[in-house]
Image (cartoon, rainbow, N blue to C red; front, side, top):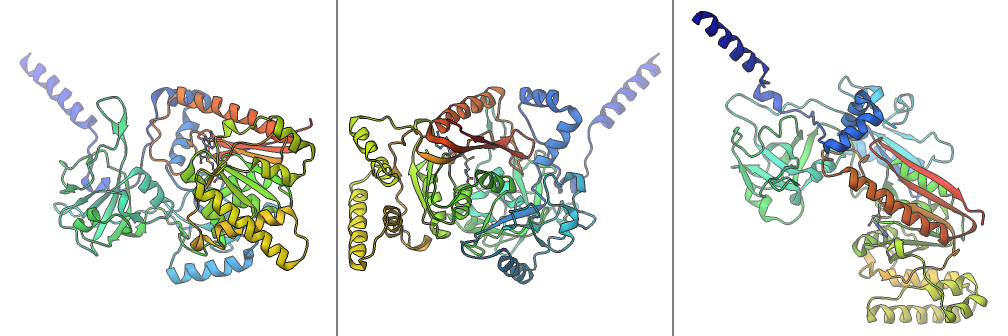
Length: 522
Ligand SMILES: C[S@@+](CC[C@H](N)C(=O)[O-])C[C@H]1O[C@@H](n2cnc3c(N)ncnc32)[C@H](O)[C@@H]1O
């Protein structure tokens, strides 16, 4: 009887031990993240997509696209010239994005990628969609298996980075100083380090936080913070550009030069500035669908950081007026800088809440409208500067432009004057930019734009790669929809009869952008 009881106990114990996942310590140095969802959201999507499909989507979201998409500034260069320059850069930098090796993604995982056939032609190909030959695909590869040099008893030196930093690294960026959270003891400049990511964990208050104190010392032991949580969250290997002390003393700069990545994608950071812009294909298509024409007055309602704004400006050959608004002043400044960098002068940037984008008419306005031309309309709506310096600067610019016109003695349209004023205010390029002041706007009259792009803010659940999505709840998803609907109402009022609205947003978690074009009849 006792023997039987002992046998039973032994069996139970054996079962318990064998059901505990046993992991060889070397196995943790790999990239196999599992996306954590809010349980309600997860159930909702499982019901919507089916468990198998949702699991494929969830896995795909943790990986970057297998190619980088580059939009050529056709006002400054051509696709062929850019291809030639990029090929030279790729050759010099030794970047090899061959995605046909045995470690490359399976074809069915290349969501939205250009056809395999065209990628076989070389590392850079032009987009095959008619009219989009100014879009180039630069192929990347991954996931690659990396040898982090693990030996029992002597784990590799490590650097832990924040989740946002890791997502950027997966897209091809380097590890910059602010992204570093923790580092092994005794790291010196030039050391090889394994780079992993600290993902948000539930905190005692029920919220999510990375919870890692910046500057934490890692011992390479199981007692390290988040040792087990970081299993399978290694994104590559690099060389430190400074010692451990330097990493936490410096305020900026590259911390780790990534030389072996799980995903190899060219970052093109600081490459061909002004000539190219890294942008996802669906964003490029949304701007293209607006079909902007030279000389039109167009509104980009949620414009920062300006990817679609600059695409529209180029399509309208930098002729006409493109009003770019964003409710964040700092973000609006980024649009302005990008416009300088790309030498685009038809863009006027304002800080404005798109939900308050309609300006009410008053009696004085009506007098102006009766004798109105497009230019008068613009002057009347023109932003009120938030600083006196702004007013003075505008006046000086106006005076200078008038002088220049009088000196030249030739007729210059109001549109040309506005363009010249913008040039004077902003300077000829990004580096000469006069501080990038962005004005506030009082809003715009109904029916005052030929075309409106509404690139509404969304949950960004479909942005790849994503390593954490737990903070999004069913309620927060619903709130996005309500917010977007209110913005759409404003867009409808702002576009003129016969005008066009393009409404674009990410289709939740399906790795796709969605847009529709509305032709406003009356
Ligand atoms: C999806 S991003 C736009 C991306 C941009 N169109 C591009 O292609 O580069 C959404 C932007 O909407 C802005 N935004 C959010 N609410 C807004 C509001 N009420 N009014 C204006 N902008 C808003 C955010 O600041 C953010 O920059």
